Image 1 (cartoon, one colour):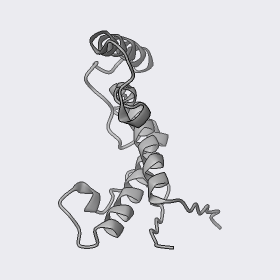
Image 2 (image 1 turned 60 degrees about the vertical axis):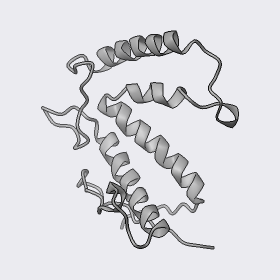
Image 3 (image 1 turned 90 degrees about the vertical axis):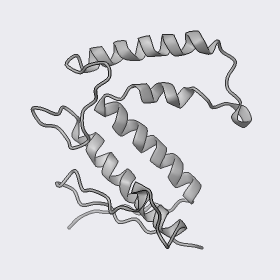
Image 4 (image 1 turned 45 degrees about the horizontal axis):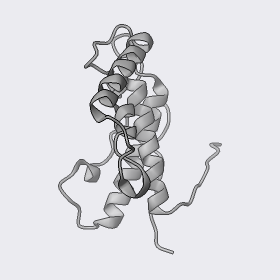
Length: 144
C-alpha cells in the first residue's frame, strides 16, 4: 500500500509552490545564479529595493560563485548538472529530480486547465519522468 497526501490550494498558491520547487531543483543542480534572480527585483508593489545595482550584482555573483565552487568544486562557474539524477557523471542529487518531476506535473495540469486548447510552450508537453523510483504525481485542477 502506498501512502498518499492530497493538498488543495489556489492556483496562485500553487504558482508560489512551483517557484520554490523550481528554485530548489535548480540550486541543487548547481544553478546558483537563480538565487540572485530571486532577490533582484521584488519589493513593495513591485519596486526594487534601494541598492547600488552595479555593486550589488557584482558582489552577489562573487559570493554565489564562491558558494558554487565550495559545494561543487568540479563544476565550471557557468556549468550545472542535468536534472536526470545522481550518477558518476552527473552529481545532481535525487531530491532535485523528484522535486522537478512534481513541478513539471503541476505546470502541465495548470496549463491545460487554463488553456484547454493547448499552446506552443513546453508547459503543454507531457512531463518527462526523470526519477523512475517514484511515480509522477497526479495533479487535478478544478473549479469550486
